Length: 474
Image (cartoon, rainbow, N blue to C red; front, side, top):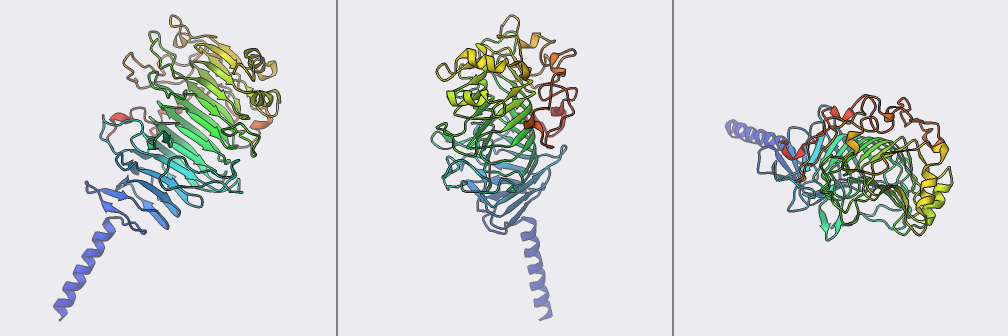
């Protein structure tokens, strides 16, 4: 009898050890993957779920988080292409993805190195309970609808996202309905977001729908559509951002650096879209000495339209197609005429192909847009008024960025950027200012005098940034 009991106890202990080693989902829905350390996620996370770096997690289909998901530094999460994997934090849910500079958290494609592409999986969506200016707003394209309108708390907290890379996301979950690399819907200012890189997104790299979340140190690399898109009353603060484009890849809807609407119809709906950007560097497709084969679908460095009231300070817009700044629509122009509403100040537009600053041609003329940008008190610059293949941006070391910052050859293969620092003597090393009331928040680092995202320190050299995710083995 004692022997039978001992055998039973040993068997029970062994079973417990196996279950523990598999890191089971408290809510069910996990299976072992094809590799010993793979864990499949395919069920809603309702309680608390902890993801650890010793396992590789596979997102199959739409995974909603209504509870709390905690992700340890160094953890890798892969989106499944066949099932269009995506992770969606619904209003009231929380994500705590806290990486470090040396051990970032990676969201990437499940495809093998060399076979990855933009739109391999869905992406990361975070929805909070902060206000938006729409009565009914849902995350576009999801098979399981998520509504994020109706929130009333601007300081809502959806968790923390720090030192995170999101790669090859942006799959069409439904025909012509993609989600972005990182989609933030009604996310409140109680949420922490910094040190995020989105690479090779099949739609926008970053999109903010309403809410008031702040963010610092953002990298949008080789995305398809817009780099930073703001809509539905988003009113957060953002500082230190970089966008870099592959000259061959753009979206038919026109790919812009900043694209901003109050809403899709340009109404006066409140809260107003009035995000504040400072110290961004938006590098468009026109930049090499021999490159004339640029995708014609590229648009403007900044396309501000549909009654938006975003403001941009201390920023470089370089090498874009239709304009450095496109001020679109009479309502948007009225916002620009009010010095406390839409402000562009201490910025530099460099080497635009068509025209540095333009209007939409009906609601605002080119002259009106240019007079606004050139307002003396705003201290904006135009350097190399138009792009010229024989004397391109990279040749003007006194004006812009290191000559080795980014190149794309005639086949569209992107070289790895080596430096984003302004050249010695560059006019971008001075001229920043933080005196405008819109920059009064303690959120903004006001110590630098440089225009753009970089002065004398290239923060993309830190290990959390990766400009070659195609060949990285995870």
